[in-house]
Length: 131
Image (cartoon, rainbow, N blue to C red; front, side):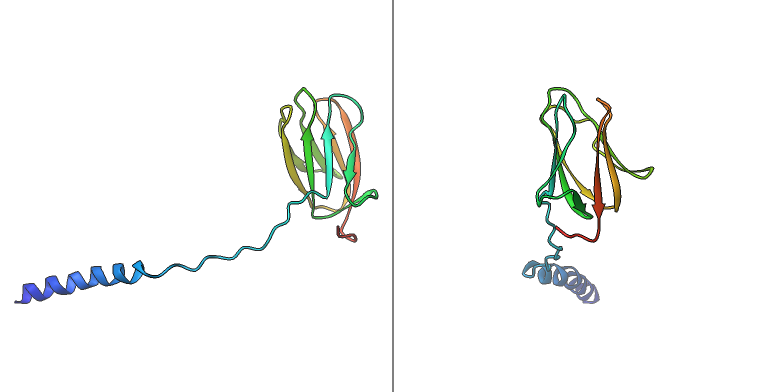
């Protein structure tokens, strides 16, 4: 009799948690909405100057803006961005047709250099302007 009670109690300990989990669903975590719509674009070609086209016009890019970089050339390109002497991004080697997005965070003069062609462009990044 004691053995039957012990087995019955053990069965309840195992089955009750399983049964209670079957019908319920765990709450879905909420995540803040993130907007990766590019505020500026940079098309890297095999020749000519590097230029950053800012969607809203002007010459300044707001801190936190997304920059879409596309390699429209036929050769590899690798871009690095620095503010003062601090490197803030590196695209790695981009094959022809590759693209990547970069979130520009630090304020200051952002120098973007193509390591494969020694071309560069400088863009002002400021937190005073939100795009």
